[in-house]
Length: 183
View 1: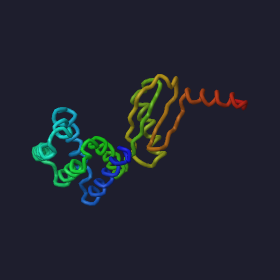
View 2: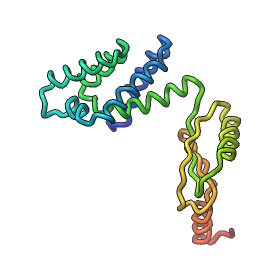
View 3: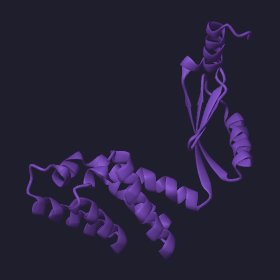
View 4: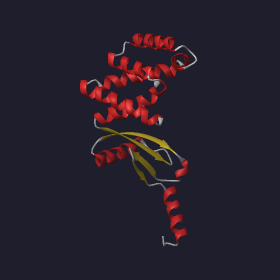
């Protein structure tokens, strides 16, 4: 099974617990706290995930860290479950998937916007409002630039891709001309 599918499955199980007990946002914050700590302290991550070290010792280190962070019982149990199932290396992916599920629970959809040039905040806000109207949900927009697009924008909302880039239009024209179709 692929890593992303495994991470998604664990995140889905945790979001169901968070939805049931009303602590979904708390769990997100706690997961992000752990991941931020691991990002900051690479030696800690090594001490917890390196199989060359004794598993019991690694688990003790993880328990000590969780206790210091004063995490909820659910997250403590969840992280230890990941460790016990040899899935602790998936914690970042689980957290990323969990954040998406938590946003969905709050009625927020994430959209990635790629443009050929930087857009003004006003333009980004107009695009965000249009996407909100289109989806019927609040949209969290992440913008980035890619000069290879030549012009236009590409928007991704989940599995939906809205490609209005000049690069794609030129590729489509090229394919049409190869097939002998009129443009």
